[in-house]
Image 1 (tube, one colour):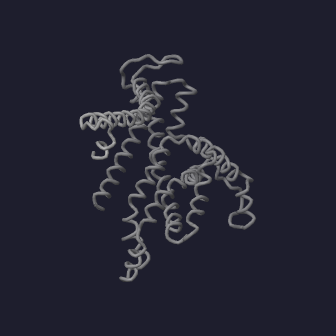
Image 2 (spheres, rainbow, N blue to C red):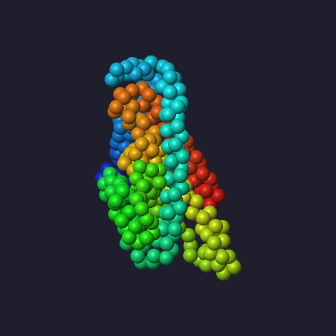
Image 3 (tube, helix red, strand yellow):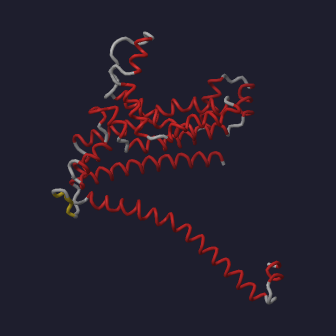
Length: 305
């Protein structure tokens, strides 16, 4: 305040005070404007379409259109028969796919964080580069690799690891191979961040006290890595609930999940009311997963504090 008074040409404390308040108000207005841009973007491109989806889900489908109303028939249809099976299969698919991603990502992240040394940055770049290439091209590459008389079948037959035709394409196994490959980078990164922050002295102390590598991993590393595991589950399981490309290209008819069923209702059947109800159910499942993981992560922070 003394600096303001000295620099004020009038030398009047009241004028200096009003100028200070004016500058603070301008700064606050600027901050509010900057904060309003993402809020406006969120409202226009997320909340508004979501509101229309919820309204449509209670409407009646007409030929190529929708009549507004209030009925639960769309939700009853979405939670019965083939659609219920697809919805439950999608949840199972997301849980299994996310678990497989964590199983593959954890040792990779542990190696990069604890043993890669000065090659950490290089290995992280190698892991992330495929993620920034076209998702469709990456999945189609697996379609070529897994097809009959494809490169993978040729290598396995040549090395006598496997003999005969490779019937992997259009199976659930092919879908999980593709999904783990596609989402592995975003599972490795949060695990790496958490594992890199574990003090090496803590692990050395555990070994000095007689704990084996396995006991150190189970009773020390894994509990400390739980926030990273929860984040990795969040980043992989939630997008898998709406996954459309991988099941379609690698699973064929056996890969029908709720994302493909929703797309079919919107694009082919033009049953917007039923498609909207199915989309709302997926959003509810996503909200439940996000809420559970957020609560779990908060409990970790409380324990750490």
